[in-house]
Length: 230
Image (cartoon, rainbow, N blue to C red; front, side):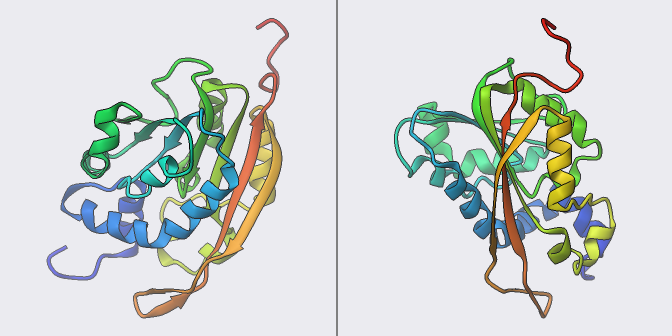
C-alpha cells in the first residue's frame, strides 16, 4: 500500500479473503468488529454438549475456544478460504487442535470436503456476503448436515451495513426476508431470528452502529425439486 490508507476496494477484497502482508491486520479488525456477533450466534445455539459442529469462515479463530467453554464434549471442524487464516487459527488454537476436538482446514464452502450428514450444526458469521452464488453454498450446507440439522447464519442487517464504503465492492447484502427466501429455496425451514444492536464502534474516526442478526434454520427432509427416493 506504500504507506497510503487502504482503499475501499482493497479492504473489501481482504475481508473476502485475507491474504499477504495485510492478512494479520485485517484479522484484528474483523475480530474487533465481529466479537459481538459471534457471541449472539453462540447464544442462539443452545449447545447440549455432544454435537459435531462445522464453522464456515473462522477467520483468525480467536473465538473458537468459546465453543468449548460451554459444556460437554463437542467436536468442531472449521473451514476457511484463506490459507493465512488457517495458519493463524491453528496457531491460536494449538491446544484444541492437538487434543483432536478441533480440526481446521483450507477449503471452499461451495464444495465442502465432508461426507453427507457429517454434522449436527453448521454456522458462519459475516460470510454470506461473499457467496456469489448462495444456492451453491446452501446446498452444500444442507448436504453435510444430518437429519433435522441446524444452520446458524450470523450477519449484519443490510440497512446498518450500507454506510460502509467497501460494501460496494463484491458484497452481496441480504435483507432478512431475502435470506429467508434463499433458505427455503434450498431445503431449510426458518426456525427463528435473533437480533441485537451492537455497541457503537469507532472506525476511521466515525461512530458506527451495527445491528447483528442470527437466523436459525433447520434442514428439511429434502431439497426443493428433489424427487422421492432420490
